[in-house]
Picture 1 (cartoon, one colour):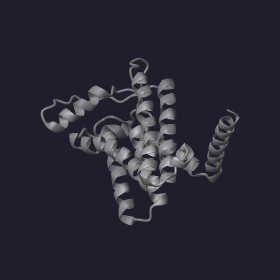
Picture 2 (cartoon, one colour):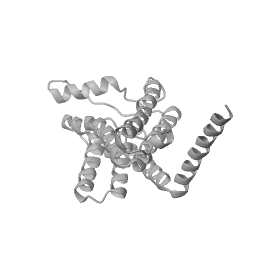
Picture 3 (cartoon, helix red, strand yellow):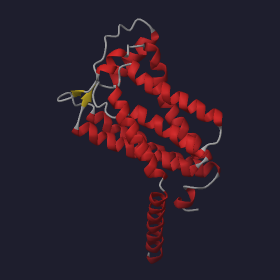
Picture 4 (cartoon, helix red, strand yellow):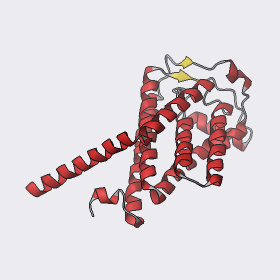
Length: 229
């Protein structure tokens, strides 16, 4: 069985092979930490609505849950629906690349409140603050990934409970980025617009056919090369 077959194969081997593609996310994340070192020329794009959202350490729970939710959704799709898995994965990675370009061209910041760290939740907030400098917030990758997962679930799953659960998680993660003061209202607007665009692109049959044609061309070239050798 060649690698192209394994991309779609059922069973443990195909599943594990597909999971390897998730490594693209932490690999891409390395670029974020390089860009996140920028501490100059960062623009504060908070608006008056952000002032009405108070800091609340309880929202660090859905904020941290995002990490498990994103990778969990990809793992489940890699096992149950490989086509949707690839759509979601590549839309997430493409979205990250777009965000990184924006971060480089237009670095932004969100003012953070003083957090005393007197309880476990506040210590979790301080841990997030310590590992993620308050720059490069627009658009929010947290919101972008969550919205993409929700839209793909609504499109390709008929389970009403799963859809409602996904919607609730999406709203809670959006709110978490505001209440822990990691992102602003405008970050959410930008993430939502980008997420909808990426969803429409990766759901477009013309784009899907082009990607499949490219894969077939590359596979054929490999086979021809192998025969010539």
